[in-house]
Length: 475
Image (cartoon, rainbow, N blue to C red; front, top):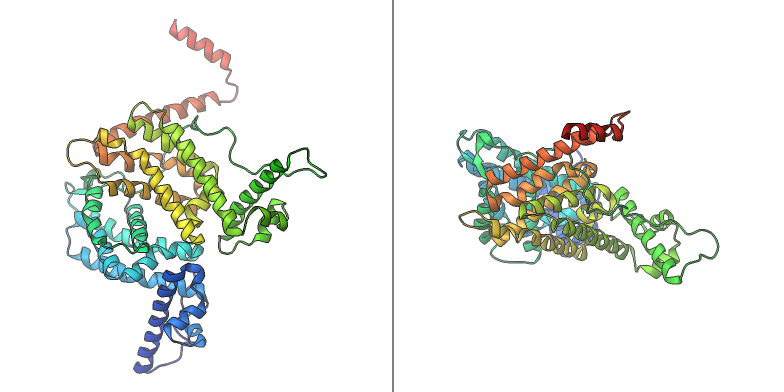
């Protein structure tokens, strides 16, 4: 991980040290201002030093380059937020640790909106190093909460949910509102705390605080038999296809090549020549079909979203009850992520790097997926049902799970998190005990199916003999 420079190692007087600290702080403040104004792409060194009122050589006294300054700014803001959370939790009951962390985060976003917007929104556009700093900061704050929970009495009621995922979701929810300049962010507190409390159970019985990979379910029958992939290159000579078919062949090859180059290099570093080289489509054809790299990327994002939504919706309506429908929907959704890793990377990791258009697509996707939770109100147990903000928070938490798995290159194993995802969805509506009974029954079915599949795959197993044995048992 890159580290921000702290100076050239010379011995300075207290006055000089104070001046240098002030210059560094002005540069960090400048990075916040220019990134919030023009996004990561607009946060160049020239803009930062102009805002900070320092020279270019002074900038390089502290930072190696633009990325180093961007990274250092994320770290600095995270440390300020972490310090406030730690102070809050020192005086709070252990069982209220997550509520305290959320309260402090909302207060921070209200009192320091520019810094919070940079941390929660702009950091998602900064590439692998910035994303690592963003996630690492959230994880450190989550560790404070988790450590506090360990000190709670065994009978204390605590939210039984993965803390880092929940805090990541809160950051994303606030990012949307900070970017729009919405007022009254602190008014979200009651709904968010009610949502997290809906997962509460005795600390001694906590089961869902850490994401746990379990046996993956069988492949959903609602996934297409053929995975999303680029069409074959056209052979030499004049193809026996219409002009429209040739264009569509080229277009899809460019789109899938874009997803692969972005997965390898990141959106900001990807260049059109690499995309055309991988796709086998020349530059003139690229610019006939797409205005630029961003348009090609947006086409991949739209393709991925439409495919994910279509498969998820098809699986959802197959269930006999709403919890069954949620299970089937996210069984299929997690397997779409598994089978299309580079397209998932476009949708869940790199979309923010595109700027406003990419961010809007992500947020529209979250709104669209909230429709699968609406029926839960019909199943809600006695008491206050989840708020509309809770629906948004649940889907945002699931997107955080997908983002984390995709960024870690673990898409192949995302279906193993199905139980945790379903728990996030249904527990606020039907209660934690009923949700757990339902999930355990589904996991038992999954285990039974897996054992049966292993039995069918044993070397030398003859299906005709198995059928004969079955008939004898029935007789």
